[in-house]
Image 1: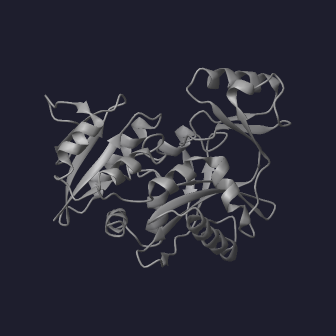
Image 2 (image 1 turned 30 degrees about the vertical axis):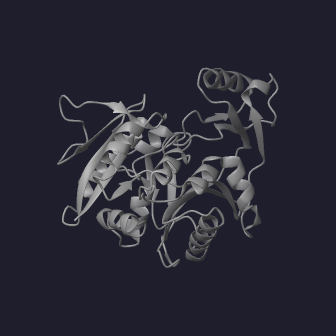
Image 3 (image 1 turned 90 degrees about the horizontal axis):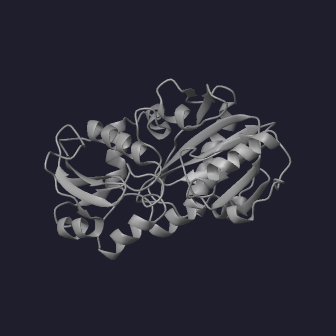
Length: 328
């Protein structure tokens, strides 16, 4: 049996989401094919490596050491690093992929270059602008140190970090007061690079892409997202019942749905992603607007990719098996 190390935690703002993903992975991984281990990373990067049964929590009296020390000590104790539970900075931005590449450790998903590109929402959007049939919201990239009392776009617009996920520090801004409040919250964070985007009032869709080693793709239907909040924010994504998610979608035709799946594959290819990814869109007045691509989409009980895979008759267990087998 293959020894699989589930990497989770990390220093990002999505630390808790990562732990939720890891729990779901541990619950669904095929124990007949894989022996699961956990590579647990604290927010300060102190880490531990241990074999697990039912819980991802470190056993009592577990010793923590610097991330790279633990990695070097244990790289011969597992066959592949399963990165599906890591999200945000360090996990999704190419950092850990580069470390693993330098140590010759096999891992799942996209390489460091593609991961870094997709983490940069502005640059990745620039890359996919060559795709026909895809539209883009008016966007201005601003260094937080150069912000003024006058926003760079007319109201309403969205402010979001250029390189964070899970809708962390994302704000819909409709007036000057909301703009001032949003900036105050962002200035108290570590975010330095912001995107201002004109608000698209349409239907939100997300679509996964599953790529075989052969270069062929498994068709996955998009998922239609109807958040119960103002938009698909952190709570709507990770709280059960926070949004209604429908796959295949019901608000567009089968032809339009298939078009989203086809465009998602083109985006995956242009951005040089590997094995799997998920791209997010808005649909308004017959136009499909590109938002971003995730190389390590969430794998929690409420996450989108497992739901889309299920609609394509791929169970969570088979999805994990696909990610592992097609990566090594």
